[in-house]
Amino acid sequence: MADFWIILTGTLVAATCGVLGCFLVLRKMAMVGDAISHSVLPGIAIAFLVSSSRDSLLMLVGAAVLGLITVFLIQLLQQGGLQSDASIGIVFTALFAIGVILISRNAAHIDLDLDCVLFGEIAYVQWDTLIWNGYDLGPVAVWMLGGTLVLVLAVIGLFYKQFKLCAFDPALAAAVGIPVALFHYLLMGMVSLSTVASFESVGAILVVGMLIVPASTAYLLTDRLSVMLLYSVLIGAVSSAGGYYAAKWLDASIAGAMITVAGILFVLAFVFSPLHGLMARYQKRRKLKTASA
Amino acid sequence: MLATLINWLTDPNMQWILMGSLLLGLGSGVIGSFTFLRKQSLLGDALAHAALPGICIAFMLSGVKSIGLFMIGAVVAGVVATFGIHAITRYSRIKQDAALGIVLSVFFGIGVVMMTKIQHSGNGNQSGLDKYMFGQAASMMLSDVYLVGIVSLILVAVCTLLFKEFKLVSFDPGFARGMGLRVGLLEQLLLLMTVIAVVVGIQAVGVVLVAALLITPAVAARYWTDALSVMVILAGLFGALSGVTGTLISGTLSNLPTGPVTVLAATSLFVVSAVFAPNRGLVAKLVRRLRQRNDLRRSFESAVVDMPGISQRTQAAERSAD
Image (tube, rainbow over all chains, first blue to last red):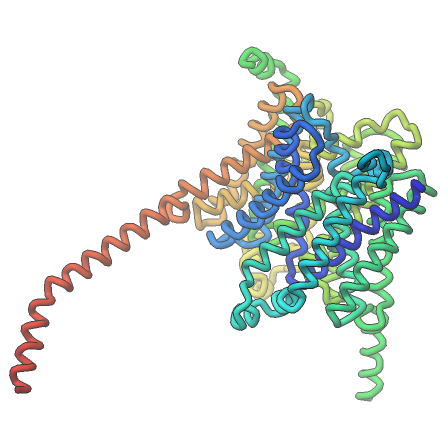
């Protein structure tokens, strides 16, 4: 049963992040995802201080607010004339530093291990179960992640056309009358929600990996957004299952192993993808050479 | 708190550590100016995360906790990571930002697997590895301080000697090539120096926050000047100042890792610069805008004073039309 819950948790994280990651990669905002996953830390810490418990809902709210503040600050600095990578770097390091200080100064009140925030402890997921009316309904993390996934799928499903247009051609989207800024903040809000929902089980770093790596792998395999979303989720699921067994075999961190497997899948796609892989490129070039000769 | 502070300042060991973090801030500030100008700010973040597997492999191979060996491992991993990022952007349609993210998270994932492997193998010596996450300057040994200080000094020295070349390469690589400079070599050198600065910086502020040591002082310095030489010096000063402040505060207050405090010191410098810097700062911009608005109003008012003349002329024109 433990295997099942851990793999399910990993897959839920992978699915949520995989869907959102596609849009981040397409909009060339992968590093904004990285920034958000770090800068939600003070939100989590403040929620802890206010409620002095692991109240999941408050933590979700706190982190979502911090995520939006991050995006807002990055945009503010950019409008002030700073290049985007520098503004991302300044904002997320400052917020993360505030979070670390809040947690280490109030270590007595915050039952939160900093290592756990970074790497997560997916192996503990099964012990923290949701009990309702005396029934054991399974791990809390699964419910939280499942809820986030449903929310993300609902929002993306409802506004699929708008998100698609914003991802590929924001200028056209604005011209057609789609509120691009609103969808931008909506996407970023969902990224921060999924970061918080996953950080306890898989840690901030795995969230970044799951946001970027499967989506980029899928980007190499197809030219259609719908197929890319599907591939991204599938690749995430395969990495989480594969990573779990690899970690068990190696006796090492499960979250780390999941990312490693995702990385291996990426390298495979990078070399062997029939559309955009190295081999395909090489063959195409050779065909051109023989055709011209 | 003041007593501990004075205690600290008079302790010769502490003076060395302060000296170390000062030099470290100086070095990374100077290098950071060039990475900022070359729009590679987030590279530092990726390199810092990518250093973890290198550090772990160095530990696995040697079995001892030596900062010198760790640094070699981290530099090798950093160089591999820069090649990885370059290969991904060069040979596929994946863009720079996603390539950074992929290398960052995958290398870090591999590093975490190795680190937990080391911890689980029950090697008693491993406790030093997790210091790398958030940095603990106060726990540096004297030999580490020497190493960190010397490496930072070398970085600054190379930047001073090759200042003109780096300047050209950062602003106009095409022109630099036309001048007969070996641009590729210089770019590789700058990249290598960035890797080294990141690896040294990890000692003081940890993996997650070392990017700030490169980015924030350089950006803060940019607000004050348009001359690269002044900017590099200022960035070095800002870096050194934040390094010293961070080490002092985290040493006097218990339970505070050095990294976050150093980063917040740098961020405060940035905020002050962004608000108060002459010309580019927020206040200066507001003042300029107000002054322009006043100028506009004054010219508008003088135009309105002219208005009667205009209306007389139009009346005359109407009369003549009648």
